[in-house]
Length: 501
Image 1 (cartoon, rainbow, N blue to C red):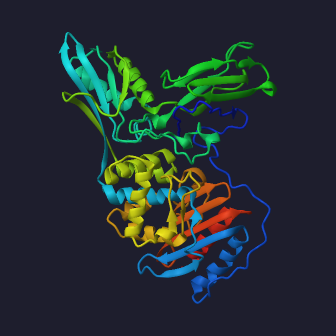
Image 2: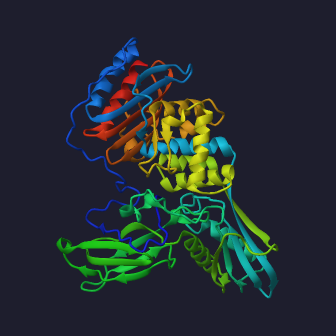
Image 3: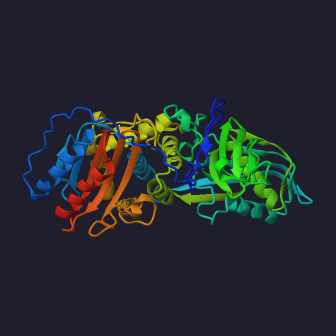
């Protein structure tokens, strides 16, 4: 399940056209449009002094014909020796390869045994089934409270909390629900992110209290011919005002459905054919902390517990007298796997803010990327070799040199959590997304583990490869200013590495 979100952008309006949209999570997030090729720069390849270099050189030369800003670096994991380099120290835009830096730094700082922790609390006395007091939640930056690990039941964690209240004899809460999101800064949308895509799942707002990746499923179904379409949200949490002017028509030729969001107003317009089944799309919510509270209220109600009071977002719970009701914990390694295998930006940004909070005392993008930079510096990576702005790579300000990425990959692999980190990467032939076909044939299948990265004009591929000889390598192939088939060029380089390494 892949989703997203926004905080209070009153000018946002995102158009989703039924005939063009892919299912949620499968939509193209970014594009590397082909452009007219600029004049080719003079290509100076390193001298090929080994059979591996001889095999790699023509593939790198071919890659340089589709990218006028190419960088390649390959190191032997065992020795640390550079076995091939082409402009290895020139920083390039790395897109989602940024997630390699974020996850590695977070694992190093917090440890593979770290658990996110969200605390559910109460205060007041219980009389005749009524809690004469309040409920409180303290956010720990956990990105996993959703239906992802619960067979699609987004309320699963909250149902457990409801059972704990019921065990105390509570069927009604007379007071309010306090929502402590103070671990993270108030800024929830990074200033560098493309404003025209902010309602898409991959640009989720980042808060210390988040629910269902800060998106809600909007489901549109045909109604009676000539009448309005039917609009519902899943789960049924009232986060939007709905303006539905879309009509149900008999012919698909006249179907043209548009869904947009302006603040908390959800607009559904156009027409939908009676022959079309329900159309689902994930839309971001305007306020993630309020969404968390509304979802918790709805889940408690489903479990027979009524909350009479209001939702109260705060930076810190008021007063000292709170009793623990339940604690939800989720492990960091599982979050790293979702982040890397599914390129889930929301998870990466939650981690970088958590890193800022735990290492630098403030859960902000500024402190988080500073902590990542300090980690890279501790590995011996020069400050001139990278520049960071966010945790996921959505910002085009995230840049790194190929050698910086291979230095990180080799360092992580040598740690106790190195094997788990490598296994969290997508691998050749894995039955998900494009990896079902990428590196899917022998001898590449199961022998290439790597993170992709894509923005307009940018394609990055960095990870590990096991050669037919059994040797293990870390590699980084970064293409900027693309004017051709970047994936094919990258794949040919990595395949030559596996064949001849």
